[in-house]
Amino acid sequence: MKTNAINNWTRMAMGIGVTCLLSFSSCGVAENADEVDTETTGAEEGAKTDDGLFESNEFFDRFNTANLFEDRDLNHDNFLDENEFNDSNYNMWDTDNDGLLEETEWNDDVKNFGLGDENWGSWDANKDNQVDRNEFNSALKDKNYFSAWDADRNNKITEREYTDGVFGLWDDNDDGFVEKDRYDTHYNTYFGD
Ligand SMILES: [Ca+2]
Ligand SMILES: [Ca+2]
Ligand SMILES: [Ca+2]
Ligand SMILES: [Ca+2]
Image (cartoon, rainbow, N blue to C red):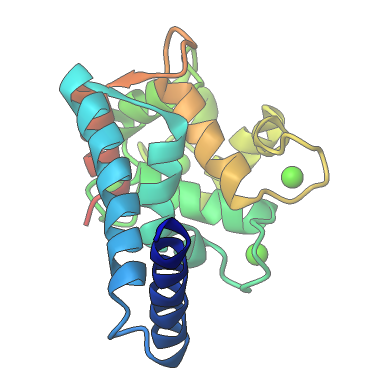
């Protein structure tokens, strides 16, 4: 009896497996498996959300799902070169999207992107009260800013290097977590719609 029962289960499992191969839509097991995965992830995220803490993987996943790296990688080679990196940073730092970087935006940006003690006057080289793209690029170059993000020093920034870089800057005390309020504020300011 026992053996028969096992055989029956084996046949059933194989039957389901064949159904799975033939049609994903009719595959209850695969759907359930997906649901389990999602639920597990959701539970983990829920726990972190309840704790009010976010970690770098969650930021990577969110960034990746929203195709934000693709938006920045203009030549679609899966890396950001220095021009792509600088251009996208300029757009991001221009939080009111008027095409110019003003001192009020810049004050927050230098803090939020790891450049704390900076002098506006030295960035706005021609003193017209805006930092244009050329001024921005030369300021970043002076600080070797691109290299600091390029963790493996191959002159190209991967999506992971990029999101870990951003997350690291938001994680003030380097404990691998960012508080929900802080995370949401930064995310919406710089990566929101
Ligand atoms: Ca690229
Ligand atoms: Ca602006
Ligand atoms: Ca200027
Ligand atoms: Ca790299």
